[in-house]
Image (cartoon, rainbow, N blue to C red; front, side):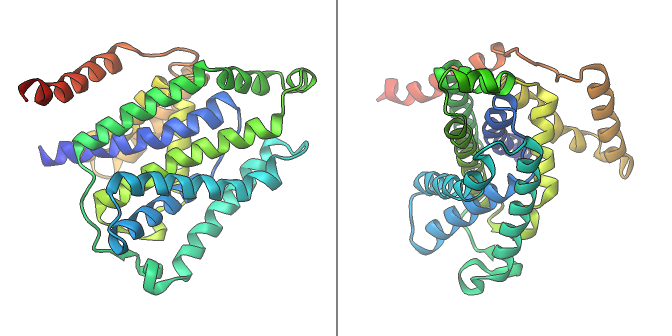
Length: 295
């Protein structure tokens, strides 16, 4: 049960991060290959607040998300302003992600632990809180997608020139989407730090960024529950094939190739899966109201 609980918590953490990237990539059409740096900023911010200042766990997650969102402005303003292409933004995020990781590994040895990492954290992230935060992230992301901002994001992705002629400030909308996606990743990083109770800069590398981006592309564009479902599949699949030893990663890659060949637009492009998440929401609501009814 502990093993399955660990996988479930990892899925919830990845869902929180993927919700943000779904807005940036699935709706705005911007590809980022360095979003792991925002997990890094959120993880270290949340960990330092709880370890050194005794800040509440949930407040530290919000603070980690805020710091990550502020950090996204540093890369967003110079790369999203003007007519810079999406490829330039992708390369810039790749370099920014590596710069943040290397910076965290070489500065603040007494505070951040340097290359050896930060240990001795409290184990605050459990299954219940992870599920609740993941559901909240999905609900907030769907609200964004259904709002005017989500419709503007789709218009910018498909008809950028026409949107600009209609008076849409493309730079502000893109920067807003980047900040929201970074906030979600910062929260996910804080959850990760307080689940593993030990963080080191090397884990926030290109592999983590690529896995999150793969979940969004596989799940489908203009969808929230699709990437969330794909995240669960991609997180659990390597564990399900662990008995095959070295072959499990080959099967993992082959499965991705087949899916992208058969369904290049993603498994759930422009579609939402409502039934499982509705049932989960009702279960959480019933569990939350049950203690109140007894009282």
